[in-house]
Length: 305
Ligand SMILES: Cc1cc2nc3c(=O)[nH]c(=O)nc-3n(C[C@H](O)[C@H](O)[C@H](O)COP(=O)(O)OP(=O)(O)OC[C@H]3O[C@@H](n4cnc5c(N)ncnc54)[C@H](O)[C@@H]3O)c2cc1C
Image 1 (tube, protein in one colour):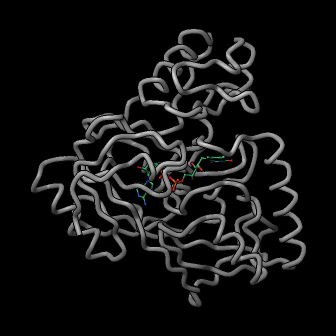
Image 2 (cartoon, protein in one colour):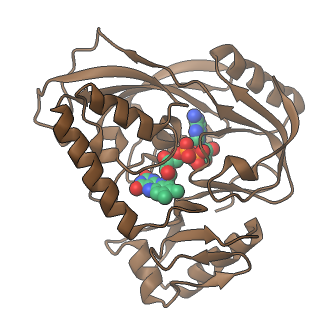
């Protein structure tokens, strides 16, 4: 199952990255256990990866086991009778619970749900997997709806053990969960129990299409990895970057896009160092502190922040 020296650039949407020293595609719990045991034997980090739509890797050899989560089954959880959370509908609203494996493509899940009259439309337009969305609590911006609104529990494989964590233990916040914290480095988000409100299929589809149209006008979609920074205060990061005159800044083969000042784009031969140089320039120019939302993995397999 474990492969050596696998190229990573094609596994991220920005198409930037060198080679994983070790790589594995995991589809079963046993695969995940094996990959973890291997990382322990080699004494190197394990990095779980979804679609790479918010991640880039350094350009050299990443001294880690990069594990792409291929498990993508969805099961109806007939036992779950809980209502949808108030944030996604009125309390007590009729809802259906689904157990979704982390490798499931989120846009596909939203469409499959819509066809069954289940409304995940607030998450429209977010690329990537359900696992990546749980880790970053993906959603529509600081005041929008985030995936945690639908989450009941998350099953995680950490330090050789499986555990099911209730939503309350996952530390969800704006683009945050405990799975982003150092204590969960190397953990694999395996599956989640989502509780999705019911709706009229045609109406859900209409909302999805509207949201997609809006995004096409406001966001780039080629060789980008979504938002890079997260602001602390009320002013969004893109506005701070724009006000600092950095929209369009180009370093090497990476630039801040004209369409959205919090998105980077690989203009051809972009490198990890180009992206990091832009990060440094933005942080050195914008007065307000900015956190890094995107994930940058250095050669030692750790996140650079
Ligand atoms: C055009 C565009 C628009 C975007 N718009 C939005 C938006 O509106 N809202 C938003 O929130 N995001 C947005 N993003 C960012 C990105 O799509 C989301 O963050 C998405 O949820 C990432 O999913 P992924 O599977 O690609 O994660 P990856 O990039 O593969 O991984 C992200 C992080 O999670 C970790 N990870 C991934 N899967 C697992 C797992 N199963 N277990 C443990 N760790 C894991 C990785 O190690 C990495 O640290 C956008 C990106 C693009 C390119």
